[in-house]
Length: 403
Ligand SMILES: [Zn+2]
Ligand SMILES: [Zn+2]
Ligand SMILES: [Zn+2]
Ligand SMILES: [Zn+2]
Ligand SMILES: [Zn+2]
Image (tube, rainbow, N blue to C red; front, side):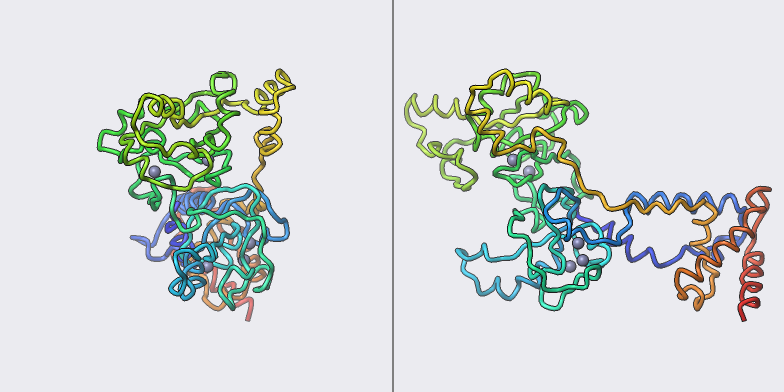
């Protein structure tokens, strides 16, 4: 989720691959265009959308988000030093939309958060340091959403174990909680769902009951379940809705009772000592569990509401979480789909483009592109070799015509 690759791509994208410095300065138009297609595919994977519109005006929506740690640090650094532990909630987190991550915070340290529900872009609001402007909306003082919810993800930390996600190091899967009542749609390591013990080298053995990622359609963490225990005890064994129940083993009950995390109200009554049968049974009953939801769980939730119309537990639950019955669509910016042919794309990377023309903007570029397309097409059609001189002649002629 750490988007170092993403920012790296950003800085590279202005440097065109060097056509003329290829080993022998010679290639077929076909080879050349195939390599361009590859570059284009990679770029599309990293930046599939056209980053021209900030989503702020759309209000609170489910969308792809990035936390800017650079801005977070500069906003809070001074205040942070002066704050007592008790006042730490004054720290202002932020998250920005896809377009702002490219247009307003490129070069900053960004953490990819994937998507969260009901979230408004913070770029250009007072959550950012003074003078930091949203380049797309040209504003720096907008009022931030009053309903955005922030958790440790916005600091770059994930899961119950509160760790930094490093895609280079991480080998297991991470799963996002769909309910988010307590955890605010946090992401969990697979092994942290199974046991609170630190993963050992052979932790994969402990995951043998873990469902395959293709077999379920949603996941709800034990913290959110503990906060809505009545409901989940009721549906826990409904195998139309629940794909699998995953219990989380506690390793040390003494340690457990000392550990106070303040996570949800499910911890209530769970703070006793370990003496006596009664306590032990109570603990057994309160075993933490997470659930994996079946594909089509929305339909099956609806069926279970219909089957038990008088259950206040069920009706109250869905009053609080109506989104579990819907598709919860993700806002996507417009696709960056300019339908250019491969030949068009190839022209982008030609390094022999005169510098002054390269900066003349889109009009000049399109003009050159059309002409270069005409020039390259016969080479491509006949699989004929294009060499450096051909390209230089082309630009020379173009330049002569312009002057
Ligand atoms: Zn934005
Ligand atoms: Zn930033
Ligand atoms: Zn912005
Ligand atoms: Zn974890
Ligand atoms: Zn949760």
